[in-house]
Image (cartoon, rainbow, N blue to C red):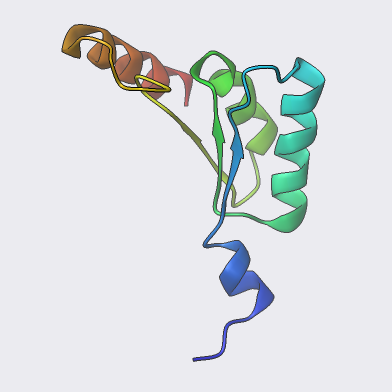
Length: 89
């Protein structure tokens, strides 16, 4: 099978999960994902709403993590995080 650039790009999630990332880093990462037309941007939950705004009008979708990084949160906390993520886009 032969893959095009577009095929490969749409298989990639652009992860922006480094704990030391700044707002400028997040915004630059979102712009980069749009420029390369990745499948999604996986971002820390607290920045998901802004990420959704930055990706509006593109084919790149926002995504996030729940219970990151180790999943040691209680089920109730994970449910609350998931509900907030849905509300944020």
